[in-house]
Length: 111
Image 1 (cartoon, rainbow, N blue to C red):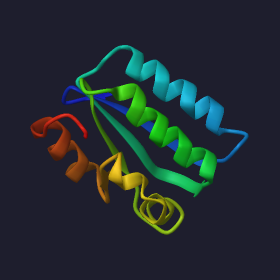
Image 2: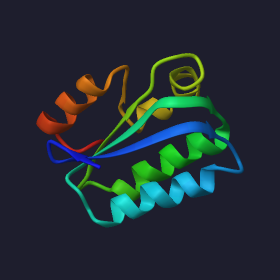
Image 3: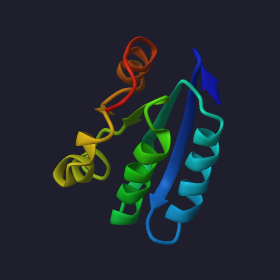
């Protein structure tokens, strides 16, 4: 789905070692189109395992310097593991989709 020129990948349920490969493929396929910006929305995720964190780090690598990337996650099941592991040092983390969209539309590519 595209909103205001930003490709949105909304994920729901559980991201663990069984589902992470499918999430990786979905994110990789979106990034293969070299969009200007991608928002990975984890607000519907109930559990984020280390395999899901790896998907986010790989998304950062795949995005390169030409695609701005952000993650929306709010709550102990998603944002906390992202912050504790330092993944938010690579992929900007926002509590709401509105905050992420504003950053993506007006911000420079992710570091």
